[in-house]
Length: 200
Image (cartoon, rainbow, N blue to C red; front, side):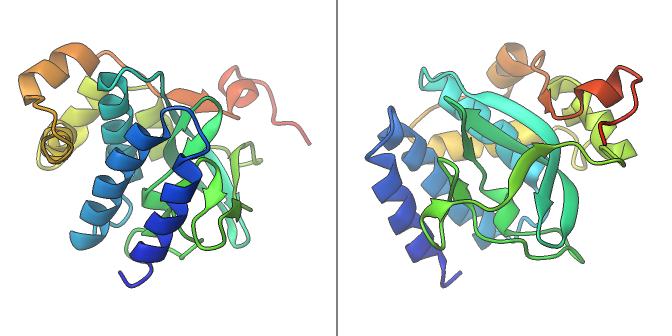
C-alpha cells in the first residue's frame, strides 16, 4: 500500500487536465483504496462495473470494456473502463492469487508509477483470444453476471458501498433496475467472435 500516495498524487495531477477529472478522481481514489485495503485481487470485473455505474450516475458517459491486455509477461483477460477513449483501471495493480504483477493502476491511460502513457496494450487480439470464463462474462448482462458471483450479486453491494463513500445514495434494487441490462463492450475480439480466424 506504500505506493498508493504516489499513485493518487499522479492521478490527481492528471485529473486536472481532463474533462470531468475531479469527479473521476474522486471515485478512483475511493475505489483504489478499498481494493487494496480489502486485498481484492483479480477483481477487475467487479471494480470496473462499479466505476462504470458511479461515473454514469455522475452524468458522465463511460464505457465498460472487456478484452485482452498485453503486458511484458504475456496477455490476460481483463475488464476496464474508458471515458472519452482514455483508460481507467484500478484492478490491474492487484493481480489474483498466483497472478503476475504487471504494473500500477491506470488513470487517463497513464501508468501511475511514472505518470507516462501505459506500456500495457489494451484491447489486443491474440491467437488464443478470451478464455472461456472471459467469454462467458463478455456475453452476460450485469444482472446475469451478478448471479454468477459468490456471494450472489456482490457487484451491486460493492457499488452501493463505494457510492456511499462518494456521497451518493444508490441502493441495490435501484442499481439492478438501472444497470442490470448493461453488457460490456468487447474490445479486440470482434473477428474471433464472428467465427473468423484471428489476424496474423
